[in-house]
Length: 318
Ligand code: CP
Ligand code: NVA
Image (cartoon, rainbow, N blue to C red):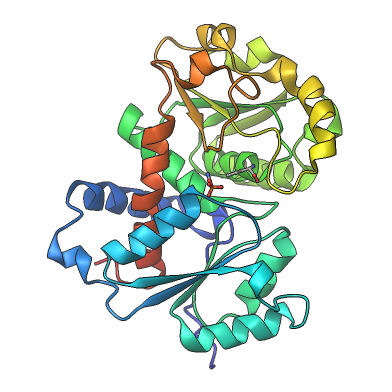
């Protein structure tokens, strides 16, 4: 396939500009309010999305499949364990073949190098559905939800608690940097749970222009001070061996989001978690099932924002 020079991919949130992210978020909000309007429901007629999964999923798989259906298109679920990808066949060959059949490729893989290889060899747009470096669909959905709940991004502080050597943390850091926000990354000082220097440097560079302040802090209450959004993610991300659970729970328990942490934040602070969640671990049941939690509104928005991402990448937004 001849490579289209205008081809765009979404491997991490900073593949888009702030203006493009806002355009996608606003379009998602508009479609959410009017999702059965015929101007949307046949936009993807005869279009197909291939979804390659090397890790489990509920939200990502179901929201992408449903989103394609609602736009009049079709999604193929393909488990990597059923494919020759990377074992009997190179990632390059799999990607080149798939590009001859489908209009887009989405992939959930283990390593950032894998998504980069897919993007470098695809003749169609590629969407990262999570790797070890980014989870851009989740974070665009999170920012749609923040816009709906807070009405603005200006002056907001987001504090992320727990395991911060983490795909979700990284794209939240990049997005807060791009949007000129404050973010506290609240984790133990052990490097096992701290963000990689590469991501800290990326955010420093972006913040020079936007005035964002993205900090790593180890004091739980300092992180909560003045927070508008408190965010937690699993301590056992997909692929972390079960044998590590006991140690991780012991190390990360001081960083659990509980009612004390929520009380130290602003009174109208919201609680977010990309899910799946484990009550009693990264947050207490009282917090995730309490009045400040917006986790199911957040989960719903995966559907709406991903529809907008697909239309944006296929140049079909208007
Ligand atoms: N938040 C998220 O990506 O969920 P799944 O792992 O269920 O897709
Ligand atoms: N950090 C988590 C996110 C799950 C959506 C993981 O990688 O499993």
